[in-house]
Length: 258
Image 1 (tube, rainbow, N blue to C red):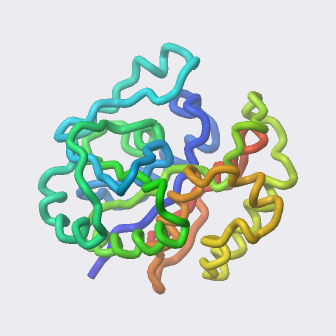
Image 2 (cartoon, rainbow, N blue to C red; image 1 turned 180 degrees about the horizontal axis):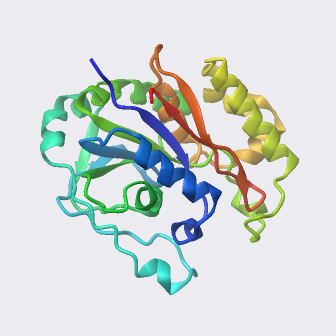
């Protein structure tokens, strides 16, 4: 049976929503090259909850979960439909993974900032999934495995975060040279992915001081683990974008099974 691909997308600064650069061009190209899915599930770095939830709102609003940016960003609407029919078909999968429903929440910028470039018409149903802050990285990885059957329902799963994400050390110049420790950790992650070696990525804190600087909090890293967990044995790995912004933010994007 044909399966939908799985993506991990670095999303970085909200400014990418309105900028045209190599990174945003790669998102446009990715959206044009992928088979059109029936629905999209985004695992968001910006929605932390007790327990795991998915959005079920029929018309999710655009959430502007960022502050102090140009008004142009707050004027954008990503008015996609919510997931209804596909959610009913996949209900047993979510139940097996102990995922609960939230009928009130809309889509934060982890979702719509990348989807705006990939699917600008906003005509594909989208649901977002939260991160349970009580879970360990290993538990998140195992939960993600339970979501694998969603791929057989033509649901495109996207983890949206950043492999390297240190806001405390950020350089507000988006073109600033990346820190050596950031590049080092990003390359270690790439090497383990290419080798198909996921356990060190789950136990990333054991990868040295570069890992601790790169992942000071795990909210932006965990969506990457969800994507990695969903890699099947016959899925080809591709890096759709490699690069940094703001010195301490890896914009690496990758796909499985394209």
